[in-house]
Length: 141
Image (cartoon, rainbow, N blue to C red; front, side):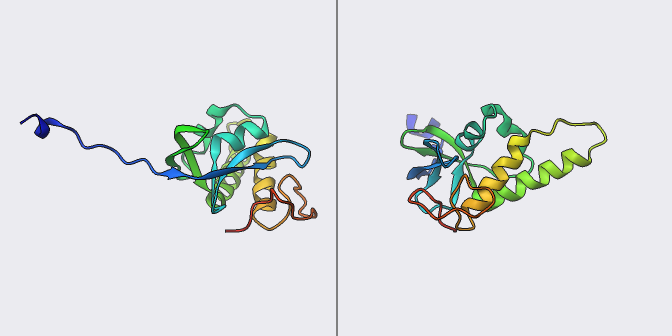
C-alpha cells in the first residue's frame, strides 16, 4: 500500500509567452503571455536594469503567479500587468513618503511608464505615449 504514502502533486500552469521590446531600439526581452494580460516579472525587471532579486520588494504590493513557460524555466513569477503597474506605483509612493529615507530606484518609475504606455495602446518603450503601435506593442487586456 505504497500509494497511500504518495504526496499530492502540485499543479503549475504553463503559459505561452512572446517577447516584446522594453526599449524601442532594443531587443524583445520582456516576456508577456500570449493573451497580453500577464508579464514575467523578472524579465521586466532585468530589462529595466535592476537585479532580479528586486522583485522581492514588490511581493507585498503584487500577487505573483508561479507558472512555467517555454524558454523561461519551470517556475517563473508572472503578474497581471495592471496589478503590477498599481503595485509599482503604490510601492514608489510609500518609499517616497517614508521617514526612513528609503532608496528610490528610478528604474521602477521607468517600468511603470512602460506598463502605462504598453497597456494604453502606445508603443512599449515610448513612455510619453506618442509612439505608433508596432508589431511588438502589447495590446490592452
